[in-house]
Length: 87
Image 1 (cartoon, rainbow, N blue to C red):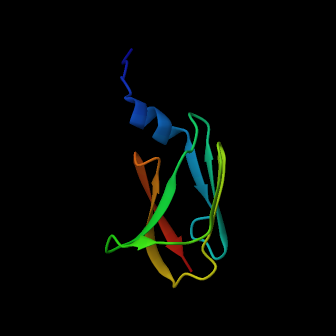
Image 2 (cartoon, helix red, strand yellow):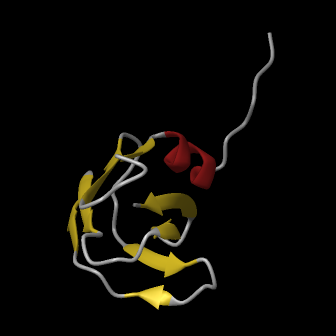
């Protein structure tokens, strides 16, 4: 039997889901392993993108309706980054 230790960041990341991805309007982020306290969106060049984000502890939504098509990065609790494709 192999036992793998997980740090807090790993544990939190394994409980995250982000859908739909690719997205056109609203993206949902859910956490099964902790509270979502902050969400930030960045362009592929690292520029902060100010979009409407609703945070409700374990269920968060990002409105990407007005974004140009492309790839973005979502930072969650300044611990985990996920790729997001906007169509």
